[in-house]
Image 1 (cartoon, rainbow, N blue to C red):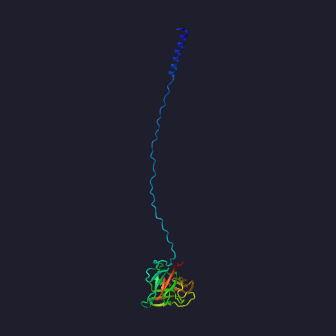
Image 2: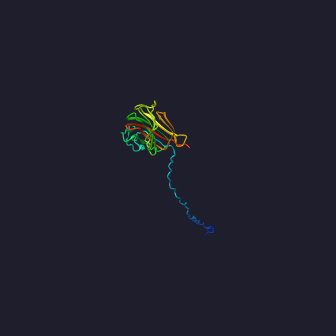
Length: 259
């Protein structure tokens, strides 16, 4: 071999040994170790304690406020206001009451129908439109206002077709008429004219007493002062047999005794 070639071979061999030494001195890369995820222990979240659902309660009904009894009837239809009226007829928007045939003795000739819905009260105001319908026009007819609780005394505000107006009473215990004088008033409509009849029984100054007023067609005609009174019925009235009347626009209002 030539000297030049020998030198090249020696340089190449030295280079190989040098490269191997460099690789041998290097630390091979370490693969990363997988870190297992830390498991969070599961915990039971406490649930709220069950509570009883309140049972719905009924809404209380409004309490009726005490007040005066008020009854109205326009007779457009038959109602229970008048109970069992054996000689009543509802027609043409009015209540026809009577006439009755003669029967029994004198006190049996008085006829009435009670407003059962009105009840028994000591003081009240009662009115209606009253019209002669049949029979004898000289007989009285009108508003029952003062039938005692045991029905042994009766009073009524009445008219006739001859323009009379009176507040008449009958005592069944003595079988006598008490008070009531036939007197003519211009305010009273004659014949078959309509008369708006009203009786007011209002408290007087003394306890258990009343001032009574009979009005016809909005005119005060008869006054009775300081009359002894008690709870009584109201309604319609015929003062004798053989007379009938029709009634419309009935109104009843209790008068409350003030303290």
